[in-house]
Image (cartoon, rainbow, N blue to C red; front, top):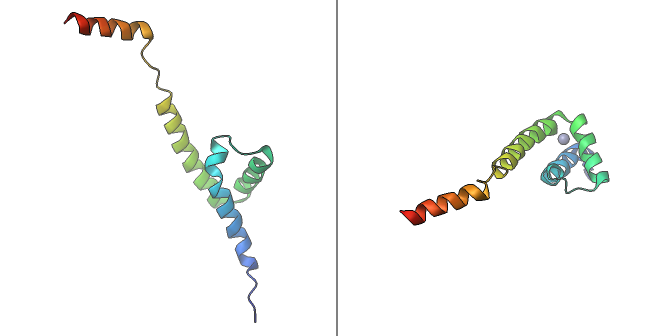
Length: 85
Ligand SMILES: [Zn+2]
């Protein structure tokens, strides 16, 4: 008897969704692909949980990268202070 693995369809969808979550978060997916992910996340609690964790991490990383740099004038002042010493 050959075993058809219909029961695995759902899991495959989850794997596919999770492998694309990063691209989805970074806005790198085509709108059609992003829609598939969105649909799956709404339908699948486990993936939604994973997505929320990923998106929280993603937000934290983006915030860390967005730390404002010291304005140029301030850097120049610091440089001149260093030279004077
Ligand atoms: Zn899922």
